[in-house]
Length: 401
Ligand SMILES: [Zn+2]
Image (cartoon, rainbow, N blue to C red; front, side, top):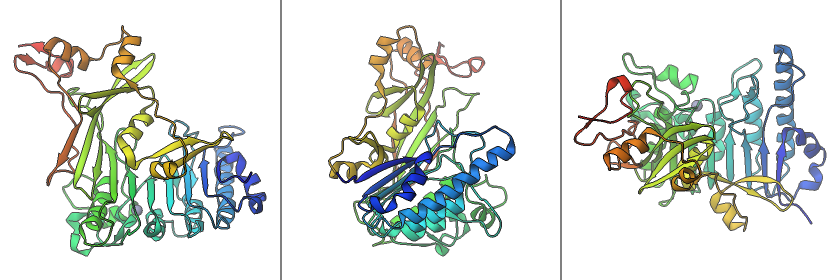
């Protein structure tokens, strides 16, 4: 039977390129990109590994260009698999994006922040490369080392630099777009060129969230640039505040078309077994050993899902496309908090303790709208009447007044 969907690892690339002629019917390709096994961690062997990946990706681009029935492509670096000084060539990534056939209308590029400039000459600006293909896309999910408003238009990279001079493109086909600006518990930087043009004295250094939301908001605001029901989302995280633990790591997903954000508080619970909690709103709380699963849950329906084929290939596809193709998606590794706590009765988090002693729910996910919907204020655990948070305990634990 002809195979319609294929997952590749780095080691599969050369075989795939050699047999390109027998794969012309493919409708989706997922590349799970990890660092090849290194001879040693000596700089020269690391560099050799990185340049082997660059050359393999360039060869892959040639083979991808021939897949005229390709509808979805994903290049995905697993977040827990960043390797040892693993640098993914931006030049090679650009040639892959440029090689995608016109038929390809779903695109994921998630480098886990490992893309880098290589070689001599003018560096590639991946935002501009992507801008050329986004207008035909129906579903896109992007996460690069740096990002900026050049993804969605030309001109001023930030609102304070004269928003009127930003000219958005149109995304007439887009149904779900997710730009993940999160880097660890923080935000990826803005692209170097955009930062130069943008630096305003006396203001905090702008990052990718500032610039990407600026561009996407301009695009969403101008009439006729997107379908009315398009979901155009940007996600990031606020950092941990070690001096005030009532302020939580907060994952924020803004929908620029609806001018609404969802904010989800996240906290580390336990090292053995590894556990993180996240409150998703409406009183629901989940636990996972895998922070990537919490991020995927925060991305919601704009995220991409994993589906396993009968041949065991793990594909990454937009959720609606997997459904349209009749492929079952793998659920995220999330536990309901009640189930997890029943299985781990000795584990306690101060949030649970505080709620137990005060008898009140003190924290939940939040929907933000109105003019401040792009706020990156972290979610704060409430201090109920009759209680205080001593600074000596990093404001983590409630004590009676
Ligand atoms: Zn950029």
